[in-house]
Image (tube, rainbow, N blue to C red):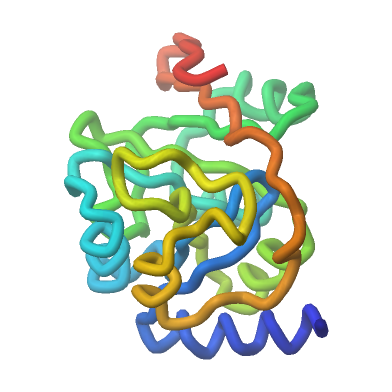
Length: 188
């Protein structure tokens, strides 16, 4: 299994507005170009999820973060440096992403990933990548590829052929940070 080939295949689908099923640094995810509202809408539809339940977005570094958030609280960088586990930060006032990704309170959950597939795919896309668990809304999050329902597999435009045997760790910790520096843990 060639990671570069898989990145190429996934990229071709994403740039045409398609959605992919792919391994992340936590669980298997459904993803698309985070700046494309039509692609984002396809994921909500597949998951049978209300658009008010926002999804998280993966990024591959500081430059991408500043493209989406003008103001990033200092504590955000400290949390990311100190976290041993994958950590999602919910930050205020995102921009340059699909409006249907932004929560009703004008926040967006993001995670910086170093996992090679996601990282390199975003390098190629030069855009953030939507990441939401590969399940119908309300059903349990699959821990491995074989637990993903056929409905999800059939519903995406491309299934990445990497790490299919891997058993996932738990979903990321979620921490909400407001611009006035309030910190709240949403999921441990």
